[in-house]
Image (cartoon, rainbow, N blue to C red):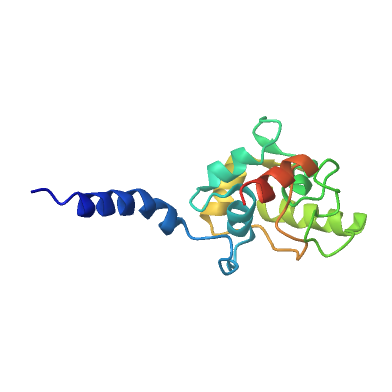
Length: 157
């Protein structure tokens, strides 16, 4: 005689396991000393990445360099990035002077040849030396437009 009830229960548990393991959207906030990691998890839903992946994902015109506008867009502060002030959850309007400060700091850290842009090899070298993007306190870096950000953060729920 076969135990069909046990088989059915086992089948249901097998199918349910991935859903139960996923958890829910009420998890505790992530904490990290590394803004890039927080950004990748909250904005791209990627928890494991390397320096080259991060660079390529944020090299919006795919030319192998980060221009100042790409630095600002990564931080969610460029026109077309939600509202251009840091996006939802940001701490208010970001002044032009503050944006200049963010670009200048990033270039000081990563622009090894001082040509005003961060080249792919400069980024990787800086990352390998332990350099990371600074958390300026202006949110996670929503760098898509309103529709993209809505889809990313609300559609999945």
